[in-house]
Length: 343
Image 1 (spheres, rainbow, N blue to C red):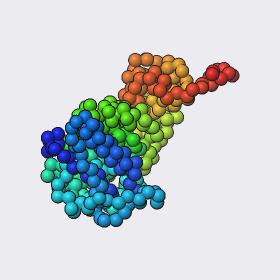
Image 2 (image 1 turned 60 degrees about the vertical axis):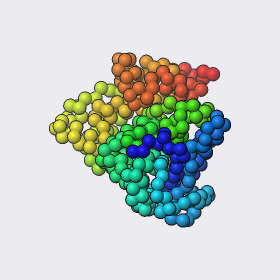
Image 3 (image 1 turned 90 degrees about the horizontal axis):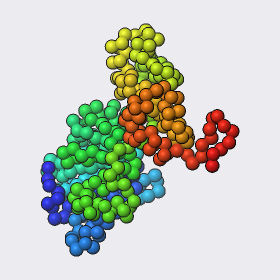
Image 4 (image 1 turned 60 degrees about the horizontal axis):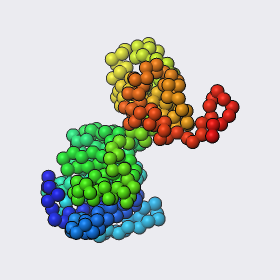
């Protein structure tokens, strides 16, 4: 891969795909790299980035039937670029990949020539369709993780991450975490000082690295294994109890090894992980509703060991129970044991 830090002017190709492309991705990325140029010039240096909107065909793109964007160049006219950025493209992911298949050979060819490639949010679907992510770590919006894993089983999805960086290929998590990847790239290519200035102007937490606090666990039930669905429903309906694998196997009249294998295949989690996720989602909702007592929440979701509860909670929420409560709780809390509202 090329060492972009040694390039005098870095050519950035901002992809303009077909379909409902995220205009916010395009505009924010363009502005951040252009403002980085302004900072560098103000500090007595030279502009470092040349950013162009590139498309596979010479036609305007419309997003949500409201905004219209035109490309600067066709990919056929670009024989060399240094950094390619793929924005989020909304809609049916299979259709999105199919409609933008014309980008695939060009992306692969540019990567072979030394270009680096970044995908923002669900732009990872287009990037993964090239095969360049196979065997690599990748992230995307947590809400799209199940479909991503189904479409691209050879990619190592780490959807709790905000950013991944693997051999010249970068991905970002959901929605506005794309701003964090932009900052990461600017720091890597233009230095920490420029990235810090950017983070202050755009008010972005420069060191945020996890999207775990934002993940809402809803249970993976898009499979057709009826026995596993019954096991999931039992776990979710009795989250406050201690549920063992043996108990579930007896209820479903199924052998342990077969049950564990089918459960993992259907849900993507072990039985223990699934039960933990269910409990922690209930705990998160309690904290969000304003419940102030951590121990009370701990007992409600079936834990008696505060250390174990904290460790499991942090594993899935990305922060401690106290930090999560303080960050997300409502301003008012109506206690179930009182009739007054605490102001």
